[in-house]
Length: 271
Image (cartoon, rainbow, N blue to C red):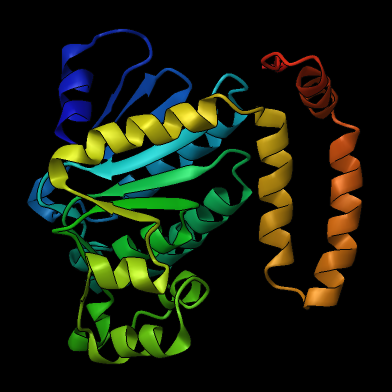
């Protein structure tokens, strides 16, 4: 995702943020966040976690934004938590508390969160990928939960991981610490699509443009129900889905979308 970094450092507009280990820039209706601390392998330190939480919450409140993209600068998307911080007993609790807050912020965010991976995503870095709504990676990417190798089982990374890939694959990753490659990640549902490294930027642009053409109001309604129905039994999900569809029909943008279809024109969304 080198072009994102180039855009950030080239632009000095008010839409660009430079904060220690994280940079962000707005591209059309997409908020692009880059982890950029290669010296620590883009580790999710306390500072990084705090900035990520703030960025996601603020972007979610911005009614003109329709997607968030998180990518990493360098050959590693993120190696997970900063191990030097985990040795410090004074901040251990804070690290995992912030990690939980980040996961909740991603879940509660009203717009889709996309991770763009070109390299290694390990431990809580892999957790970040698993928790995202859509993940696009390059064919040289890999994913692992290697905490067990250091005596620290990846319990929290295993939470979203086990909810998007089969139990046996998640168990293999968690109990052995071994990585899976991009094709294995795609086959098992950890990522949405695999592309060549040179195609990653264009793929993200295409994806965010597709989302940009949709109604934010409808996407928010849909994301909320989609996440709610996953953890209930199928009969309850269908019953709740019936209610969600009826509620969706009452949205102004839904009424506009149906009318535009009848009139054979493009819809004029409220945002």
